[in-house]
Image 1 (tube, rainbow, N blue to C red):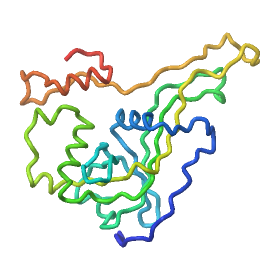
Image 2 (image 1 turned 60 degrees about the vertical axis):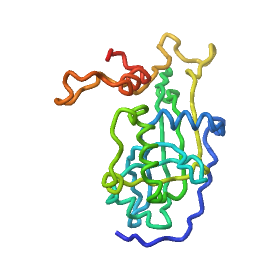
Image 3 (image 1 turned 90 degrees about the vertical axis):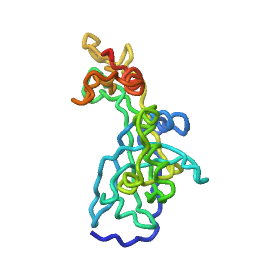
Image 4 (image 1 turned 180 degrees about the vertical axis):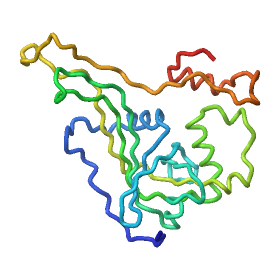
Length: 234
C-alpha cells in the first residue's frame, strides 16, 4: 500500500441538491447529532479504490487553538492511521441516526426520519503531546463519567493507541423529521394504516465480567442506560 502524500484535493460541494429544504446550517443540530452518536463511517480512497470503515469517535477541543474537531480512535498500526502520514489523508465521514420509519399508503411515498452529517476534510494524526487528551475526549464521549472510576492511562497504552483529527469546518447536515405526507383528497385508501414508527438505539441490561460479580454497577454505566432509554433497572 502506498503511503505517499498526495496533492491537495479540492473539497466537494456540500450543497444538498435533493430535498434542499432538509439541509440544516444550525450548529446546535450538528452538535446534538454528533453528541448522540458513537460510530462514524469513514470513506477514503486506498490503492485507487473507495473504502469505507467504521470508527468509534469523539468530539473535543485539545486546547491547541484549533477548536473542536472530530476524533477517530484506532491503533497505531491501523491502515488509515498509516496512510495519514505527516500531511493527512482526504476523507469523508458520515454519522447518521435513523429516528423513525414513515409508513405511507404506498411504498413509493414511504420514507424515514433521520439526521445525517457528512464531514469532509483531511484526517491528520493528533500530535504526540495531545494524544492522551484526545483519547480522554473519545472516552468521555463514549462513556461519560467513566474517567473518574478508572485508573489513568499508562504511557505504554497511550503509545499503542492513535487518534486522527478531522476539522468540523466543512460539514453538510440533512434532517427529515415529520409525519406522513397525506391529504384528505390525495386519492389514497385511508383505510390503510399510515404513520411513523420511532426508532432508537437503547442500552440493555449491563453484563458484568466474571470477576465483577457482586460489584455494584457504577454511576457512569447506570447513567448511560438511563440516558439511552433502557428500560431495565440496574
